[in-house]
Amino acid sequence: MLDLLIIMLERVGMIVAVAFLLTRFRFFQNMIHQDVLDRRQELTAILFFGLFGIFGTYFGVALDMQTFHFENMSWQLQTDEAIANSRVIGVVVAGLLGGYRLGIGAGLIAGIHRMSLGGFTAISCGISTIISGILAGYFYKKGKHISPLLAFAIGAAAEALQMLLILVIADPFEKAFALVQAIGLPMILANGMGAALFMLIAYNVISDQDKKTALQAQKTLRIADQTLGYLRTGMRKDTASAVCGILMNELQPGAVAMTDKTDILAFVSSKGTIMQGSIQTDLTRQVIQDGRLIVTDSVTHDHPSVSASGAIVIAPLKTRGETIGTLKLFYPSRKAITDATIELISGLAELLSNQLEIAEADHAYQLAKEAEIQALQAQISPHFLFNSMNIIISLIRTNPDEARKLLSSLSSLSFFLRQNLEGTTAKMVTLQQELAHVEAYLMIEEARFIDKLKICIDVDPSVMQEKIPPLTLQPIVENAITHGIKDLDANAMVHISIHESGDVIHIMVEDNGEGIGPERLAVLGQEQVQSEKGTGLGLYNVNRRLLMTFDKNSGLAIESTPNKGTKISFYIPKSEVNGYDGNDSRIGRG
Image (cartoon, rainbow, N blue to C red; front, side):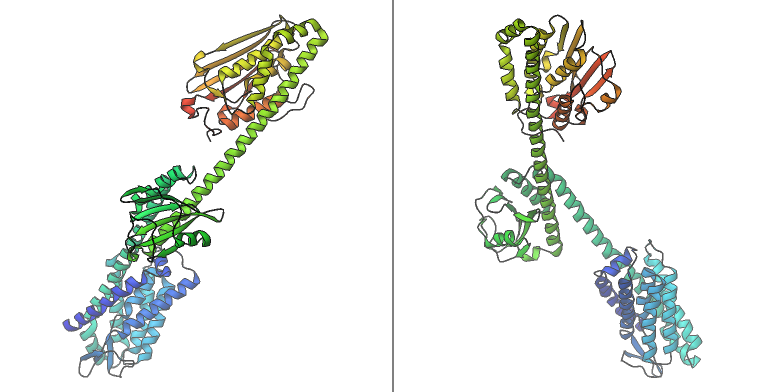
């Protein structure tokens, strides 16, 4: 009995190899993770575990009941022969991992095969194999792992059931009883241990693979987080050098390089960062031309710090389907480049390509915003000039002497008009410059209104160097005079306030005019409003440029009460908070 136990345990050693082999199959990984198998995967699993049961049969040992000698299995049994085998393990594992259908399917394949071999225990062993699949399926729990101890108990119970059926079905009983005495306990222990060992190995290997995958994903996300800030600004020598340094630190190859279509942008090795000239290798040119990843150990390097005997992975960097450069990782030998390494590098190349594509999209978006802002500014200039000329024409009709005096004496008018035209090409001006424009405009208006208009300007000198889009304040003031106070006979007032308020600057223009009706107030500044009083172009234009230059918190806030006046205010961020110095070519913060 001890000899048979040793033989059976030796045969169980083969279970280890099969368990490792199984972990490479997708259907088995899905079973371990308790995912639902599709029909094809289910049939594959049934066939595999059924064949595994047949495999366990043939790797058993045949027992001659006349001599009680053990011999290697042959293709067919004699009438007086029986088999000590590990067939039950495959069937039990199928049921435990896949449920009734897998257990019964594998049991049928292995059980019918056992019946076909003959021997006086053929029927009892075949039936018990099928019942073992049903028994194991009963203990299948979706979403839960089977412990090795439970697998041992079920495997041992399945084999004990086989011994019982041999006693009940096999004939003659005396021969069946002698067989169970000889092989019963060793087979119960060996198959129980085999089932437990199989489950233990399978779970551990899959768990290790999952941990490796998780670590790889974690590393990829970490690289993405570190490189995003660089590549979002475009692929240049400085950003490429920073990205290569990150990849060198995270992946630890021999060296990392990035190229565009013609030049080496950066090359980083353990010896430091080296900037080089044009691309020298045909392999790099081939990747740029074909857009496909290349792995090779036959490398002619254009990098003197890398051993010529090493290996290299060259992956394409693409935007909108076009290869714009390469990512190159150098290794000491081809053996150092595993399938997982190639998959990781390929994924990183796609990740970096996506970041570059986002950078291009951001750049195009900023250019579009800048073009729209410039168009809006150009639109404001003729709008202002038209209104200014109307004022002068009005003075000429009502008071020619005053108009002539105004044209000859207000030399600042020409200065203002020149500044106004120049403002259409400037991205930002200081509040001091903008206020000077407003004051020049108000000189004209005060001359028109004579003594009935009072202007109150209340500003904080410490914020006058903060930046604002040009021609922002003047249209608001013009709106207050043109539509707010123009019908007042006396005591017309326009109040301009500019003050610091925490992290922002609060700018307000208030008048005591006739106010704005609720319907017009709801859309004013949000769209151009057609009416007999005007189009609302000025306020719409100003609001649009504020929102595009800063953010949604900088839009115009308009408050008005009929016959009590209107207050228009907005906020702009301070430069140290906004990160905007006025000389920056960026538009906005978004």
